[in-house]
Amino acid sequence: MPDPGQSTRVQRESLTLDPASGNVTRTPEQDLVAAEQPLELRVEGKSVAVVMRTPGHDEELAAGFLLTENVVRSRKEIFEISQCPSIETELEENNVIEVLLSKGTKVDLDELTRHVFSSSSCGICGKATIESVFQSFPPLPAEEFAVPAATILSLPDKLQAAQETFERTGGLHASALFDREGNLLLIREDVGRHNALDKVVGHSLLEDTLPLAEHILLVSGRFSFELAQKALAAGIPIVAGISAPSSLAVEFAEASNQTLIGFLRGNHMNIYTHASRVQ
Image (cartoon, rainbow, N blue to C red; front, top):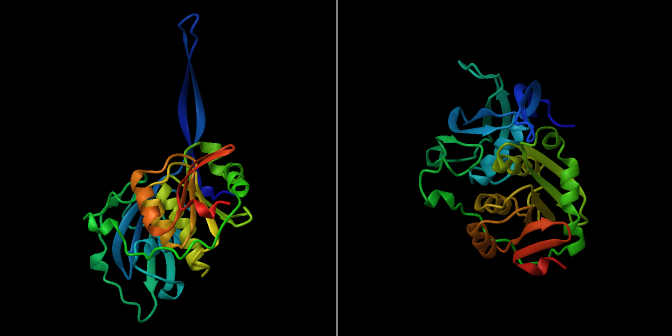
């Protein structure tokens, strides 16, 4: 079942034009739209980011953000993640998340460059320098993991069937994790495509199942550089998008030994890098 905070009901006016007469019919209605709220991420009491996200699975979002931002490397470095009420805000409560690190974990929070607003459409808009965009995650090992093409081609229908909130609102991105047999293991939806993937990665981090060395990632739209980087942080060898990849995503996947697939629709796919993983 979708998280109850993932959609909200709003008032709208529906306009319909009759081409024959030129008359316009106006009908007041209610509509479901994807929910969007700011989330402040704090580490050891220090605010490190504000992200626009769809409420729900915020602990996973925080954990995934910290891993893909190279702040933590393993589950044992996180002592506790808790949600606290917003202070002095007119928005809904529970828009602040606090992360406490385990004793002995050393991080330089001043080096975190995401101290500014990050929009829901771009996960790197808050970066202060070009250098900070390229995190230091090692390339994946040799291409031992391989999957039949038929298995990969079956994934979009499974993703669509599981996108319950998108079905109701039409306004969310999705990231889904599959095993080598094509079984859907996890799906997260969010107004931000990078948030949806952070939630998948964060869930895996908190469950201590990283690296995801025998898994496939499918995203509901285009595949950007940042998604490739986040997938690398989680150790995912095969990544795919329903739509096109960006040029930088292709370059990054090639250098990182990731298999990158785009335009995964119907009985067709484009394999841009390391095609030997697709049998």
